[in-house]
Amino acid sequence: MQNEHLEKLYLELSSFEDRGITIWFEGSKSNPEHVAKELCIHEENTYMRDYVFDEGVLREIHFDKIRKNNK
Image 1 (cartoon, helix red, strand yellow):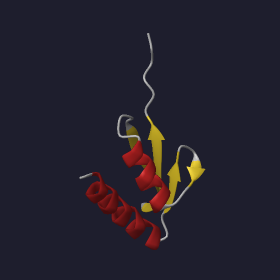
Image 2 (cartoon, one colour; image 1 turned 135 degrees about the vertical axis):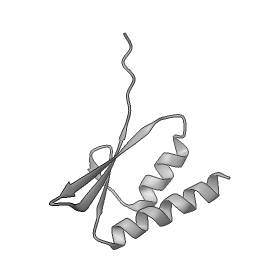
Image 3 (tube, one colour; image 1 turned 120 degrees about the vertical axis):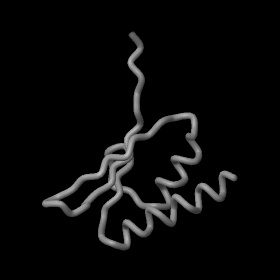
Image 4 (tube, one colour; image 1 turned 180 degrees about the vertical axis):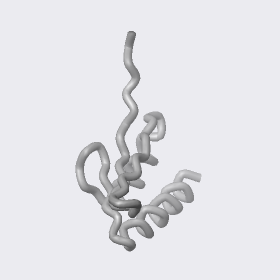
C-alpha cells in the first residue's frame, strides 16, 4: 500500500514540476522524489500543503510540518 501511495504522490508532484511549479519541503527547494519519500516515511507527522500563486498562476507548492503547541 505504501509503495502505491508513494508512486501516486510522486507522479502528482512530477506533473507540477513539469509545468514549472517549484516544490518546497520544510523551507528548502526540493523535488518530487524527495518529498514523496519524506511524506511516506514520516506518515505519523502531518504536513500542510501551501499553494503559492502569483497573479492567479500557481508558482510554488510548499510542504511544512504542522507542529503541535504543548500548552
